[in-house]
Length: 173
Image 1 (cartoon, rainbow, N blue to C red):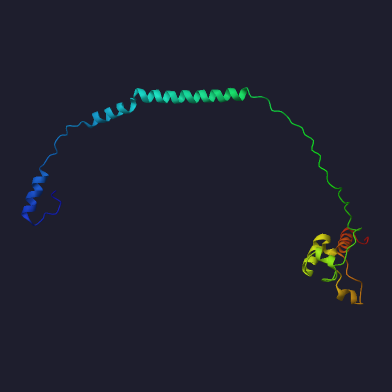
Image 2 (cartoon, rainbow, N blue to C red; image 1 turned 180 degrees about the vertical axis):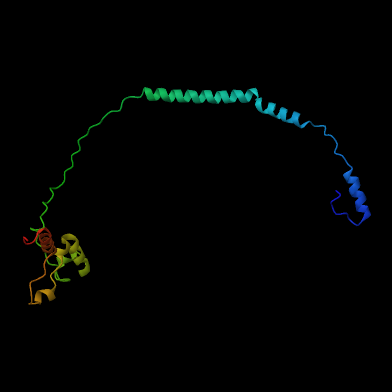
């Protein structure tokens, strides 16, 4: 305490000296003995608690044994065969793309049957393209009226031409 700062007041120095001379009193409680008794108490269980856990374990063992017996003695699965006849109208034969005739889209409100394809020209054109692909598009009037050169090729014809060019090895060298 000599290296600590001494206060300038002599009363505080006297109180500090009195407190410093005090020695802690010996406790009447033995810490080691308390810890030993706590360990003993944690190991000991009551008879009723031990019987409760034994009963729970025995009942769960009986349930598991019963389920095992039921599983072992259950009847074999039966295979059920049933014949179900569904009568549907005969399917229409699928036409090849070369045999398909592409119908032209009727002009809007030209006849009453064209409304079944769609109410507007856009809906009719969309249903025609979805049904027949790009070959189902009507021929443009500007292309038909142009006298110069051949008419437009269909997508099938263009595909065949591209395949022919791809597979043609060319002239011999």
